[in-house]
Length: 341
View 1 (cartoon, rainbow, N blue to C red):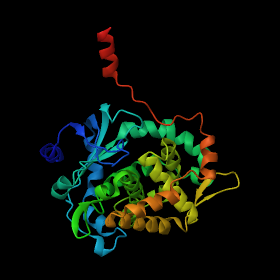
View 2 (spheres, rainbow, N blue to C red):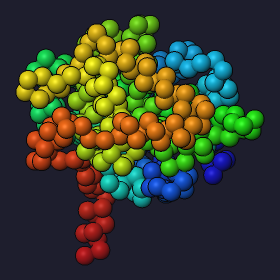
View 3 (tube, helix red, strand yellow):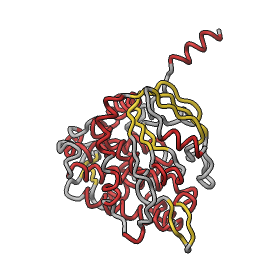
View 4 (tube, rainbow, N blue to C red):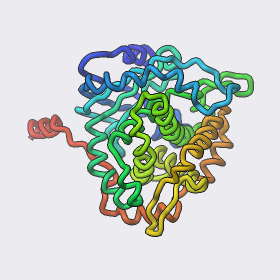
């Protein structure tokens, strides 16, 4: 699939098509066996152009990471095309269970070294999740102050920076004087640590780009409240799932650091004075674990923070009538079923 991935990086036109084995979330043994998936999408060229400016800052975003110079092995490509699309059809692993709102591919480190990676945001999927799941959840989870600070733009932008963050930080690393990769060393814990890393880097890079004037300043007011609300959506996927487990780590770490709090009604709020610093500290620890290929450290970190906090469980108990996720219905399938009959 190497040549296929190289060619896919150069794909342009009105359609965005992905077919192949990519994600390893289903492999709970070693985290290395990929499942087949397929996406067929129509490109939103205007929205893609609006976001293209962010990709121009990939190198400086990499330099801005809270990562020691001794862990900066380099080598990943700078190319970072961004596509905003509307999903027409998905199949295989992409259709099973929790629906993907965006993806960053390919995962092959050889391709990433040569050409970087492509970020694809499924805008119609994101809007459906926001309307059907996100809004009902945040009404139960957030304090009145932070509920007023939730926005789709903050959600959309964080998802974009989350996907960009998968292509930043350690990839190929040196351990015991030999070249290896982060996913090979972290094994079954890699999906959870990597999803957690991408979430956290996405937040600190949003703030970085706001400070640089690349993103609008008004986004700063809605960023952290929207992210906090979204955590309660992701954690419902289960803490043994990579995204849900990564969110559990974030929630418990940030509660411990007093960056998140609960009010008298048991609803969550952001401590604006501490959230940015705590996010950077968490990012630094996750990046260190990846850069060192520290499986034991990853296991200890997940063991300490990957659990359901009682305050979180109290919120989850109030969400029994809110769907965990959307289920796509494709008109083409209905047409095929009709023809079969």
